[in-house]
Length: 121
Image 1 (cartoon, rainbow, N blue to C red):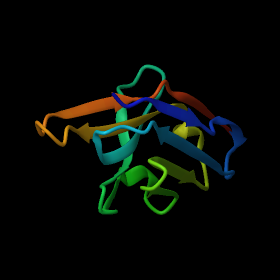
Image 2 (cartoon, rainbow, N blue to C red; image 1 turned 180 degrees about the vertical axis):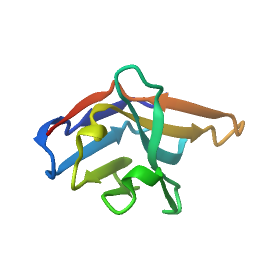
Image 3 (cartoon, rainbow, N blue to C red; image 1 turned 90 degrees about the vertical axis):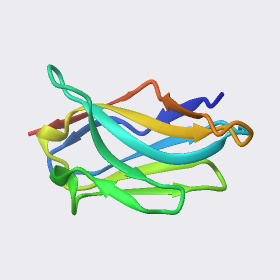
């Protein structure tokens, strides 16, 4: 199993910055993609950004040019640097990690507990 610990949420004014971190516990499972989702009140959870084990990144259009996702494979940690924050970025941000068994190839999906990001206007 993989446990995820998130940190870095908070309250910030529009135009400000925050950095989210998500550390995955050591495991014999292989860590594949890592990413961040968010859920605003009354809305569905949406993918914000993800990054493959090889470093390929993917962003939702609304954050392109403002957010940067990165990962430290040695530490099994994924980061989300959020700049030029807007009120519409407000929501609970969830870390998402996909892993696989090196023996069976079975894939698994893991979620963090969520961290609140609030951007005031």
